[in-house]
Structure formats: C-alpha cells, structure tokens
Length: 182
Image (cartoon, rainbow, N blue to C red; front, side, top):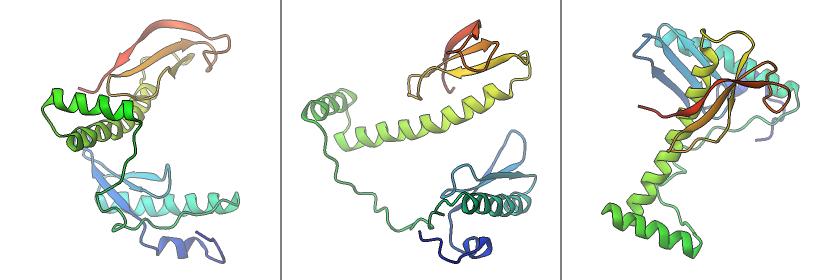
C-alpha cells in the first residue's frame, strides 16, 4: 500500500482485522491487528485490550513510517473463497493420496488437516517460545534456543548456560527435549 501523505490516524480509521481473544486462565484479553506483525496488546476487559491495541497500533505505524517501511493495507475478508488450485510434485501427490486412503479420508480432507496442523503448530511454537522465555525458575544466565522449526511431531529445544547464542561459547545446560501441546 502506498503510504502517500497518510498519517497514523488515517491508517487507524481503515478496516484492519482486529482480533480479540479471551484468556480463560488469567481472565484477561489479548487483542491484535493481523496485518501488523507483532502488534498485540492485552487488557483486563475487552474494552481495555482494544484501547491498548489502538495505542500499540499507533506506535507500530509510527515506527514503521519512521523506518521508511510500507504500511500493509487492510486484508479483504472476501478474498479467500476457501478454494485453491494446488500443484504438487507427483511423488508428493501419490504419498498424500496413500496417507489419506490409510486414514480413511478424502485427499482434500487430508490436505486440509495437514495445513491446519501446520497453522496450529506455528501458533503453538510462538506460545511455547514465549512460555520458555517467561520461566522464572531458570537462572539469569540460562537461555532458550529452539533447535527446530515447529512441526506437529514436536519442538526440539535446548537450554544453554552462558552467552545467549549456543553457537558461541555457551555450554549445554542439563536439559534438551521435545515439547508437544497437550
């Protein structure tokens, strides 16, 4: 989207996708603007979360404009019909069809499930990293290093003592494992 002569207020008036999610454990609410990566806010009430989101969005826009970045336009809620044309290598197509047959489902349903698992894995990955970073029982010199990208099978990670980068002189710290969502 061309930034033109728009200011922060102009952008905030546009129909960006704002999502409000209640957290049953804490009783708080999280709000985010989907088109602005990392633009997330919390509040004790839906109203407070929304107000905090508008403030965070203003800061997000100002920072992006200050760095000369283009501000993404609002997503079109009607642009995703639920239908896509998908080209696969023959071997992958054959293997997916075999797995769908083994599962007793259609190839279409198998692919939908596989995509849903990946999308869910991305969300779980972000939550897992955040949770590991928030652990208060770790000594200050211990750092989390994720060893693999999210997959439905789990997430490999290691905790390191010393410098933040395990590639540098940090040494393994008594734990390595996989974490799965319950």
